[in-house]
Length: 215
Image 1 (spheres, one colour):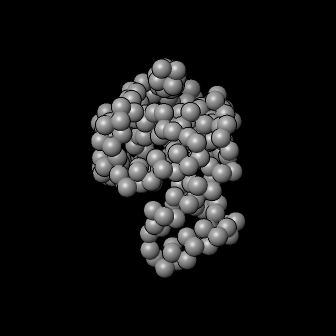
Image 2 (spheres, one colour; image 1 turned 90 degrees about the vertical axis):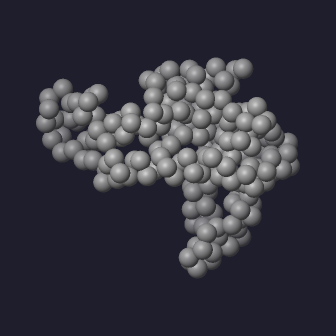
């Protein structure tokens, strides 16, 4: 099974990808992670990417395609793949089709986690974590049982991400729409796009994805 998982920051894409990795032994291919790993390992394509980034330029589609090519070669034909952060343009989508064919694969589904922007703003701006153990909380949906103490470790220190504010969240949403707009028509024309309510409880989102994969 080879899928593209789409969703704006805060939609729960990371959580669902982790579940797919655990439940289906799939491999999550994040272009950002692959790029950092290739640079660190000083692979031929990693060294090329490093030179481009050090020059202050964007990594080309060709370099990203070669990164994915290398990863698919290492993974082999048995394990399914989740593409995260790629493709982002129609040209990349076309390149991916050729790359999958080269490795004897095909794209099975493009799954988008749909969100309500106002509800997503509420979800993200209200979240905070225990500074000691990382347990997550929310101003509206999950406050600690004792207001000033973490339920898990008892710490009285909490923190919020600096970018968890309304202006930043709405900017992220706008960027997501701009990045996905070019590729959705490409895949919709092939009948591959399915949508799941990303605002539903985590278990319901997972069940929705499982229904798509089983279809």
